[in-house]
View 1: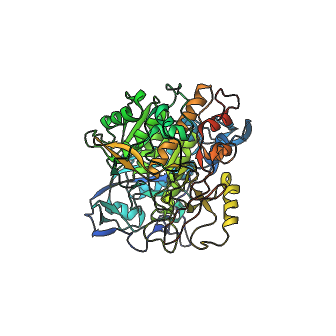
View 2: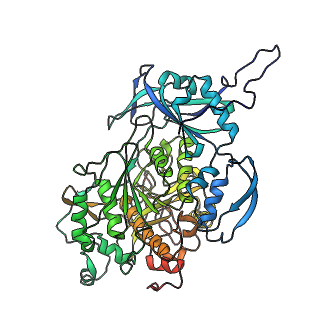
View 3: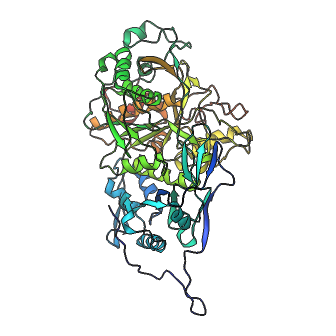
Amino acid sequence: MRYRWIPLLFLLSTAPLGGIATSPWGDMRSKHSWKTIPENWESLGLPPADTMIDLYIALKPYRENALIDALNEVSDPRHSRHVFSTMPSLRMFSYVPLLRYRYGTHLSREQVADIVAPHPDTVQLVHSWLEHHRVTSSSVSVTHGGSSLTITAVSVSQANDLLGASYQFYTHTKTNETIVRTLGYSLPVVLHGHVQTVAPTTFFASPLTQWQTPRKRSGAAAVGPGKSSLASRQPGTLLLNVTPAFLRWLYNTVTYVPSAMDRNKVGVTGYVEDYPSPADLTSYMRKYRPDGIDATYVVASVNGGEYDPHNPGGEANLDLQLTEGMTYPTPHIFYSTKDSPNGDTYLIWLDAVLSQQNVPQTITTSYGLNEKVLPMDYAIQVCYLFAQLGARGASVLFASGDHGVGGGDCTARFTPVFPATCPYVTAVGGTMSFRPEVAASLSGGGFSEYFVRPGYQQQAVSTFLDNLGQQYSGLYNPLGRGIPDIAAQAKKVPFFYRGQERIAEGTSCSAPIVAGIISLLNDYQLSQGKPPLGFLNPWLYSGGLNGFNDIVSGSNPGCNTDGFSAVVGWDPVTGLGTPDFLRLMHILDPDSSNPPE
């Protein structure tokens, strides 16, 4: 909707001695800046002053902790009762009873919008600032119930004045991508308590996939579909290819048949013009899941995202084939998100999905980037939006990365991957082999530099760090959010790409595999008249602990070190371990008709 200017209800200037009024907009303070141009980028110089960009402005919520409190309550099984308290309502401008939420009572779009709404003073203050810089009301639109603004067609000259910035053209030396960015930006001091972030400003990187380059399948036979092929091959440490039949056997989903297809959906995110192919999906299902040869999916265009099934990408094919192979006949949505030189794919996708009345119960993403290349204010905003998804009942899973404790120039500090480091998503690491499964050396893991350790993993992570001692002291943040949370197979995973069978490896395999298992749990919940699991982590680290196979062997080397080791309990290589579907289902419902084996 378009924004309507509201008259100021308070004085925005002060009068010093002598009666000369001063503007609050001239006292600027840095919001974020880089000392040097980020790695792999170089400047192409100043753009013409009339070059147009769109600006996204995220406003801080009035009730700062209300969303996270609500998220924890609906996601933690220990919150079993309704509790009432009195809180101010922004919608009514009066004090009304506020319902504290019970486990599983996920919030509606409107409830979330009310919780994250900014204070009216914040709205008026930001409006006055924009008006001072001659930003017209017709160019401003509101998203998320007023928690963010989008300003269309702002000239670079005007953006420089607004933000005390120096926008330039930058090009990526490897991809030749060209963007308009600034190495730093500022806000008036009076706005720092009201504005979380502005984009595009100092965010340079595009999301990277977490998979290794696929190779053509070798002549070795893969584990075939169905009980007969599994029975003909006794389990052992030698592993050929990780097929749906093998995964369903390994993670104990073979006997479960989905039944809540009218209420349960899987969302697969796609970026960088990477599309799935229905022909490749049919080839995959014909070979590995023949009962699901009619599997299909719906494409949702985000920001004008295109869909060209005749020019598919490897990541989209891999993710979709793995989730379809695990969950058939559960409906799937593939989100094709168009990249924008003026914005960012995560913010674009989150804005679109959160605006919908309903969200998928399970969402998997295999894209990420090193946390250190992100402005902290930007990362906090993206993470906050993922918290909104969790509060609405979505289980959001992210690949944890493919470079162990870090890739690239990381000899001074390990480099965990974002958004996996966000405390409000579930990060998935990688394993390999079986009987026993061991950690895959590529499995991304470590500790966030931006986000503190959340309460739900305090005990598990503290135990690991106590046993670690001083090893790697100074290379990681011992107070940070630990990743991954859980893990699954990440090596020798077959899929079809442009008509040929390929082999993939990486946590891009692990995340959709786990997403498939979580989707089946959501299906079971819904079929029993219960709510979906939503944000998983508080449950995983408490009641769900016994539903995982602890991985106690392997490590994730990187940054010229041996990396962390998989140990008893949680570790920053495989998290809590790999899921056992029937055990998890039995934890959710001890009276279930399928007891754990």
